[in-house]
Image (cartoon, rainbow, N blue to C red; front, top):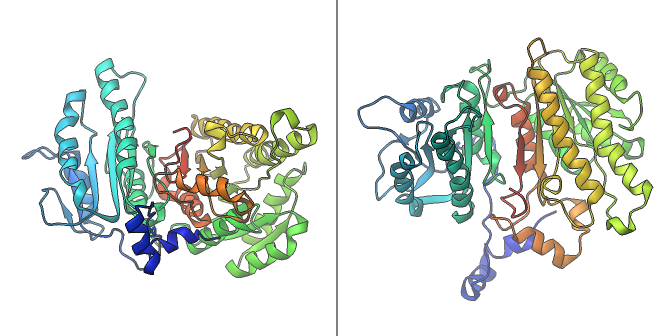
Length: 453
């Protein structure tokens, strides 16, 4: 589904009319296309100390290795494709002043669809009050700056744990994702990245080469796009959906040269059947994407047990059962990558969605718990993360009444809904080997919707 308003205010007579009337003009977002440059212009790295080799220099050196035009001195003529603000060395709130003011002086020269990315240290339980204040301050600062950006530009943050250098592979992979067009609808988000053994030599064009991925709920919508994106990135993909969606499921499988498994994810043997199929047809399993989900919206006063129970069974209990089976059966061929679909409704709640919000908040809960189990000493390793979409243009959202749909589109900082590919790009990043340092995180793909954080 497309947003005709965005197209109208960016082309022809209606573009001129919208300008004259002062109507909101959401930008046409730049999304990933093979062969396009990583950024829309030169990259400015701020936060360094002259004469001292510090984290800003290390980040700049890494970006130079990506064949980018990287500079560390602002000027009044360059149209910046991205500004990276390195705040990892701040120890007091006062330390942020110089780099923040340097960013302030450059924002008017940020190109359409440009990027602002902060790199800071993640708050830790052992921080002194002064250090904690400085580190938490970056959170509010970044989210506020993201709300001020225009013309499709976004602001996001990389929060590096104290045990990881700023130029470690996972940190740089996260920075690359935020700089790229793959993160078009990710805005105002901070992602924590820890130390990892990620392979710095991973092919950025085919990061999932040699991997086998399973995607549930893959017959249409977001699930189908996730399958396409994982296949584009090199994975062999098993698409899973209910028998009633068999024809559409087969079409997706044929399109991506994967295989289809007709299966109700709530079945007791769902995990066993997924593993059996993946091993028999592709030799193993590396990535599991829990996308299957349903809606049964009702105000709680009108909620029936069958509507509550069905949503919990599909959206939450099935994920738990399948993941627990696969981990217990040592079903993953390599360190597992588990990515589950949550929702902004599970973060902030939504009227008429008490059942859905419970299920999606539960997804966030089990994601964090599985992440701890995977990372525990003697554990299998790997990662568990969640992606929380906001308003995404699908057949499901197309059924929302017109006024409610328009409001949902425009309340985000980017003033529009996302596309299924936006969710798929975030999932593909978290599923990649380069994201080994991202674990137990919830990445919102919502255009910085006003609900929650």
